[in-house]
Each structure stands twice: as C-alpha cells, then as structure tokens.
Image 1 (tube, rainbow, N blue to C red):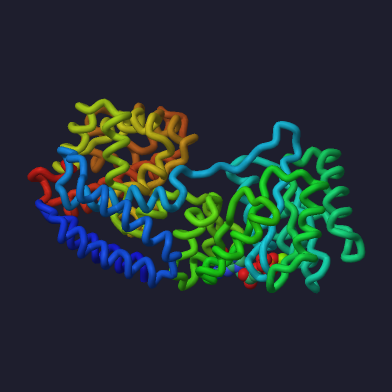
Image 2: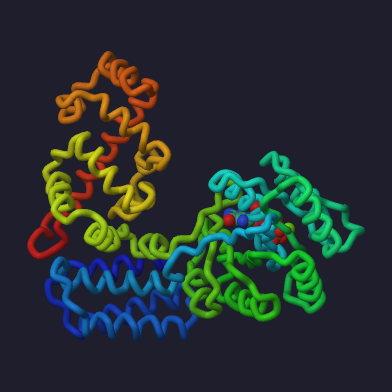
Length: 440
Ligand code: GDP
Ligand code: MG
C-alpha cells in the first residue's frame, strides 16, 4: 500500500549523511508513483512533489538532524499540511442546540456515523445529543437509526416516513430545546448519485435547521469519486467538514490526501469500523506519521524544544538511553507533559508507538494525572528508584498512603513497566544514530 511504499522510500534516504539533488529527485519519483497509485489527485501530487523538492534541495540546516532526516521531516511536514495542518474542532453553538447535519450518498455511512458521532459527543464531551431520523425514503432507514439509538441508549426523534424531512427537522429542534439536548444530529437521506431533488431537499433542511456543521460522509474506498462527491456537495450545500468512513478497509488512502487540497474542507473524523466506538477525530499530523510509519518523532522534538526546559529534556533523553528512568523522572515528566498536551497524544508521537500492542495500557487519561501523582508521592525514595522492589505489602501501603486502590497502584506500575519497555525499544531503534543524528 501507500504507507509501505513511502516508508521504504524514506527508509533509504533517512540514514544518509549527505543528500544530493539526484537523491532527492530519485526519491521524489518514487513518492510520486506511490501517491498516484494510491489514487491521489494528480494535481495534488504535482504540487506536493514540487513543494517537497524545493524545500529538500534548498533546505535550511537544522543542526540536530542529518540531511536524510531533514528530508523525511520535509515530507512529513508537507504531508501534514496536505492533510489539513491543524486538527479541526467540532462547532458549538452558544445558543443550544448545536445542529449537525449529516449528508452524503447512499451507503456512505451517514446513519452509522450519526450514532458514532453522538456516542463521541456524549463520551468525550459529556453532551446529550438527540438523533433525528430524516431519511424517509430508504426502506427501514428510520428503524436503522432507532436501532443505533437503542444500542447507545440515546433518544431518536422520528415522525415516520409520511412527514417531510423539513418538518421533521423543525420539530426535532423544538423538542431538543424543550428537553435541553445540546446537540441535534440529523441523519438525512442519500441517493446513489447526486440529483437535484435531493439537493433541493437538503437545502431546505439546512434553511430550517440552521446547522453549525454540515458533515459530508464519504466512503474512503471510493477514492477519487469521494473527492468529486465532496466538491459537488460543497458547491451546492456549503459543507463545513468531511467524515471519511471505512478507512479500516483495504483502502488506498488517496481520498484522505486529496480532499483537503481539492475542496479545502477539513476532514473532521475518520470511521475505522462498523462499531459505535470506531470513530476517531482526525489529526493531520498523526495521519501523516501513520502513513510514513515513523511516529511523529520530529514533531516531538520540536515540541520538546519549545515547551520543555532544554536541560531537563536532555537529561531525560540520556536517561531513556541509559534505561535509568525512575518514578521520580516519571513524575517530573508528567509536569512537563502537562505543557505538551494530552499524554496519549504525546505517546502516539513516539517512534514505533503505533506498532506497539501495549500502547493502550500506557496511555493515561489527563484526569488521572492527579491520582498518579498521589501514588508516586506515596512511594519511598528507594521504591521510586527501584520499582522492582515494590511487592504486595508495599503496594498496599502505597495505596493507603495515596488514598487510591491497590488496583490503581498495580496499574500504574504496569504502565511504568510498559513505558520502560517502550523506551528500550526506542533506544534500540535509535542506535547508531548518535553521531550528529537525533539524540534520543
Ligand atoms: P448510509 O446509507 O449513508 O446511512 O450508510 P449506513 O450508515 O447505513 O452504512 C452503510 C454500511 O457501511 C453499513 O453496513 C455500515 O455498517 C458500514 N460502515 C459505515 N461506516 C463504516 C466504517 O467506518 N467502516 C466499516 N468497515 N464499515 C462502515
Ligand atoms: Mg442511512
């Protein structure tokens, strides 16, 4: 796939201490082919190659990176830009409810994504969404949304299939106001192809419901078609964002790379499966890292350089190398991490982290940081330095001292172990690159 090809190509240049113009040219030939084969729009590819080539050949010299690594960084930066740069947030109306309209072709995943999005809003943002069944054409469409709502124990508003979608939207919003729902998500009808009748209706629904977001749901597997569909929906309806579904399938990924460049619409979420929790906010830099398969090590370094006290960072890096990382460092690092952003985001930027099965256990909810601090502070100096001595009775004592449960103490120690293992793997990967290379 695209990721494999790009990774192989970048692997070749990554280790180079000197990069010639010919090297860059050769690499760009391969990158270009890989992108085209992934069904990325040819104009987008052309632009991309041009920008990367310019920046790679006349590159500004960053002392901490080898020329090969700098080229990788350029590719990564440009890929991130191509994917939309910053992560794009979901709108909130200051006068509730915030209305979100889901539109798209039949089978794209609107109904499923309506449920997933409601679930996401409830879980991540503690919101109370109302789902609205406004697809009155597809047989059983209302039933499908009701099933989804039932699974999630969320209310579904419907008036059957004899009332117009415009009227349904209107009444749904009135009800949401009455019952204090802060979000209303309208699941609309789709067709196999774009037609005027559909667009007309959607425009009317838009007028009556004044949505803060109109999300186009597109199937990533349809490649270039997804981009065309996005262009025409956007032209007629004025979209605010795109949800790319079925990225879990055997997709070539070209749609993700072209949509933003062609339509200038942000990709807000990606669908990664049929289940209700298979929706992820779209992070351009993470996606780019995922495609390039190197973890976002460069961004990590950049962030570390700007946000973290340099000396401390160096010390930490040395400790990572030497494997002498202790609970004290962990505590210390947590303080730093607070300035960097969510911990799971940070972890996802570490090289190889995406390939590690243990990552789930490592990630820590921000809210838990206070608890973690309490636990570590209840450890003795020796325990912090030599966690292997923390046996069952010590664990009980620590739990008592911190006001947390033994299970929480166990979990933290396990997470610490995972983190150490990860660091070991990282330092293994970075070996032989000490001279003039990244100093991890
Ligand atoms: P709609 O016609 O746009 O409302 O599409 P549906 O929500 O009914 O979805 C069509 C099919 O695609 C269903 O079988 C869904 O389970 C499936 N589907 C939707 N999103 C995803 C996804 O992200 N990944 C996978 N694998 N299947 C999905
Ligand atoms: Mg549907």
